[in-house]
Every structure is written in structure tokens, then in C-alpha cells.
Image 1 (cartoon, one colour):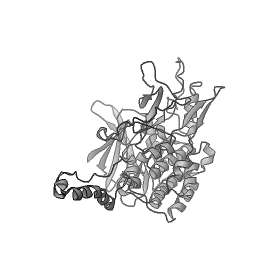
Image 2 (tube, one colour):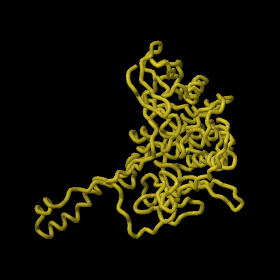
Image 3 (cartoon, one colour):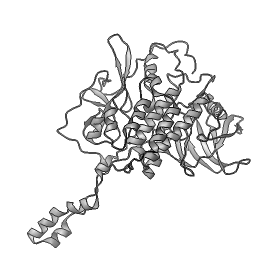
Amino acid sequence: MQALHSQGAFGVIYRAVGVEHPGPVALKVSLSPWNARFAREADVLSRISLPGVPGLLDRGVLRDPSGAEYPFFVMQWVEGTPLYAWAEQHSPSIQERCQMLAGLARTLEDLHASGVVHRDVKGDNVLVQLSDRWPVLIDFGSGHFHGAPRLTWQSLPPGTPEYLSAQACLFEIGLARNRNSYYPPSPADDLYALGVTAYRLLMGHYPPPLDAQEDEEGTWHIISPDLRSPLASNPQVAPRLREVLLRLLSEAPEARGTATQAAKELEAVANEPVPRLPAASQPATERVSPLERAWAWMPWLALAALGGFTVLLWNLAPGPVPPPQRASAFQSPDAGTSAVGDTSPSQPQSSTPPSQEKKPVAQEPLPEPRSGQPRPDEKGRCPGPRQVPINGGCWVEQLPMNAEECAANSYVLFKGKCYAPALAPPKQPQPTSRPPEAR
């Protein structure tokens, strides 16, 4: 064993040296003597052997001095960078990003053909290998395979909220009436999560959140935002690529097609000549060229010449003002993950440092609460941990955007920050004397 690499909710990963396997290996050890979902991950890996998934090399049990037994398994070591961090570091072209997404779709194609559903596809669970820049899908703790017993006792299996499909959200709302319901794993959920991953990789931020609304008859509906306008506002996303994203993010599961179809279309887009994307950490609209900085000095020089104090003004004038910086969306981890992670579970954080927060704009009107939006209680507190009370409604702060991007995503700009309306939580059921069946 060499070093501790990372720790998740249920296990820790060590970079180790294999006795029977050349090179480093990944040793994952459970944090508790017995955890069914930890064992499920090894069961899933034992059923597949794919180039886009770490291979299972061994499994067993470690016994501590007290006699407690901790399960472990050994995987191939993947030397790579998480997908969004890779995009931040290398500023790949549209073709390169589409090729990466096509490779991920090919892995999902093979998984689904083997009867396996990942259920937590996202950028943080995709490593770009340093050797061949091939995407490797990791962390199968939420995975499921045909015939596997149910494990989850909660409303939904472990996953990441931003990547939940419309039907998963509707199911969670419906649990208020039937706590014994079971949400069946579906490849369509992986395809929706692939769409969210692709949207964030190409656009630099998550798609607008889904909206839950209840009609007069008490039936809940999930309303997906219209993504055509924000996608069309990005000239780097060609019409053919927009159609792929719109289909993957469809409300209807059957409209998303298959992983094979997505892979073929993404590969076709990757082979088309498309201009390179600007660096992910600095949009093109916010860049300032050296020539533009030079022109910014012309008024100062003119004043100095007219007053006859060129040397004095040159010494007193401030230096060139650096271009405005905006925190990169790729620096923000996938928020709210509750899955068995290969890294420490992360809470959502604002990617704007306090020292760089924009000053309030006095002219901005207060955002009006929308239908179905949760409201603060009598003490002014919102029900969700990330929700902010503003003008009688509960809002969720989004990744940093300019005014145009915020409006294009149907959000509201308030005091220099972009907010989306929070979703109303489902009604809590009355407690029962018998717990629901495990999932």
C-alpha cells in the first residue's frame, strides 16, 4: 500500500501496489463492517469488462484486531483528471468535447447491453485518462443490474439532484401518497444524466432547473425549461449538436433514444469542422486584448499632454486595470451528491469568492415569486439548505453569469447574482409502523 487517495461516504481508496498485477492498483475498503451498497459496487464491476470502466481485479475481507471484518475490492488504477477539471485545464475544442462525450456514450451503450445501469453519471464520475484521453466511468456504488435485489429504503436511490430526470422527480413527489412505490432503474435516466453532463461541458453551467407544478385536480407535473434559446445563444453549439442535447434532456424517457444513437451523433459532430471554444475560465465576451488596454490609456495621456504634466500624471495614474474575471463553472463540484463517491462528498458552494462579489444594483426590481415556489416561514427561513429568501419567495443562487446568460436561462438577476426559483418540496407522509420495502 502506498497512500490514501480519497474518501467517500462509505469507503476509502488507496493507491497500492498489486502483488499479482503490475503497476499501481486502486484498493477500496469499506468504512463499516458491512454495507450492502459497497458490496453492490463490486457485484456490478464483476459483471462487466469494458475499456471505459475500471476492471475488478480482486475482492475480499480485511479483519481488524477486534475481529470486525471490512469488505474490500481491488480495481485497475486510472491515472486521469475529472471531466470538468480536464476541460478547465485544456480548453478543448467543440470537436474534442464531443469526442469525449461520444466515448462516454459508448461506455453507456456497453453497460446497458449488459443489463447494467450506472444511475450517477456526471462529470465528477468521469476521469479523462492521461495516456489516451479516453473517458473512464467510475463509482458504481449507485449501480444496478438486472435481477439485483433492492437496497435503498429512501425515496430514490443515491444520486445527484442536478442530474435527476423529470420522471425521477415526479416519482419522488408521488411518494407522498405511496411510500411503498419502487422507482425502476432505467437506461433513460443515464441518458438524461449524459445530457446534463454534455450541457455543462459545452455551456459551462447546468441547464435551468425543472419546475414542479400542481394543477387544480391535485396532479403534479414537471415542466422542463425551454433550452432552445440558451443553446442558440452559444454560436459554438451548432444546430446538429443542439438537437442531440435537446433530445437527451427530453421530459419523455422514450424520446431520449439510446446510448448507441447518442454516440453516433456525437461522433458525427466531432468530425465536423467547428471553431475552438474560448478558455473555460474566461468567456470571450469578457476578454480584453493588449490593444484594447492600450486604447484605455489614451484619455489619460491626452489629459497629461494638455496640462503639461505628462511625467507627473504618469507617476500618479494607476496601472492598467486587469480584465474582469468570472469564476469558472468547471471549478464547482457536482452539487449535492449523495452517492457512494470516490471522493469526499461535497456540499454545494458558491464559486464566487466573498472579496469578488458584485455590489448591489439599486435600480434592480425585487424578483416576484412564481407559482408553486416555496415561501419562507414566519421567521423568514426557507425549507431548503441552499435556498435564499427574497421578496416572499425562496430562490437558489446559480453559478456566476452575466445579465444576458441569466435572462436566457429564465432566471432572475438580483444584486448582481443570478437566482432560480426553488422547487416546492413534496408533502411529507404520515409515519407508519412498518418501514417500506428496501430498494
